[in-house]
Length: 212
Ligand code: FDM
Image 1 (spheres, rainbow, N blue to C red):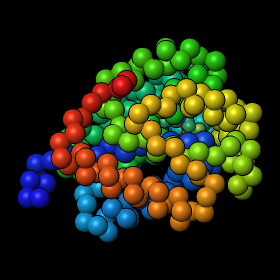
Image 2: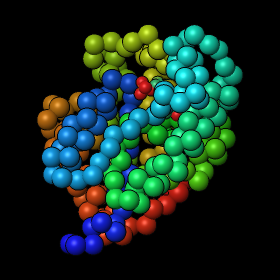
Image 3: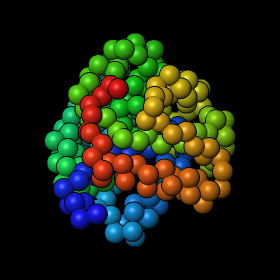
Image 4: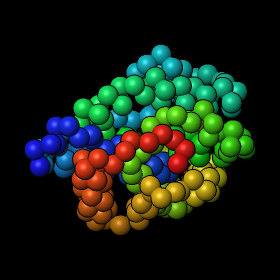
């Protein structure tokens, strides 16, 4: 329709354990939507380019040590510093595909033993995703995929706890996708769901805030 310039973009988040395939699927989604002529950008959290992001990056590389609550709040601050840009992009019609968001924030910190309710509170008021694509893979299978890197959280025992925390966070905005399927099959499921979501947002689905 010819009102599309007045309508908003969709906020689409990819979540999952390390090595679940999020990063390659988000670039495939970007290319796919661009190919259809949509205004779309792909983002990721943590955004390591900001000064908060550099503190996070140094922590993840084990180059600095921070209290568990402190790093949790930095991850959250790193989303807050992008919130207004996120809102203006969405309102101007750009769809955002985001690799990790508040669910990573809560899942990883609560896996360390922090209270889940406490972990959720600094996320309150951030924009709520229209769709969360959870790429589901067991921690054992993920670990078999060419191994983890050197970063702080890339260890099987910890990833098992993260998987349990993620399970407690899923809500109506989540679509759980079997990430062990061939890459093209995963992509096909993602693109179908995403097209639906983009269309619904265009038609005026309201933009809401966390937590739903
Ligand atoms: N991570 C990511 C968190 O612990 N909290 C957060 O809020 C976010 C966004 O940071 F292990 C963790 C998840 C992952 C690490 O993520 C870096 P990438 O996707 O590997 O850059």
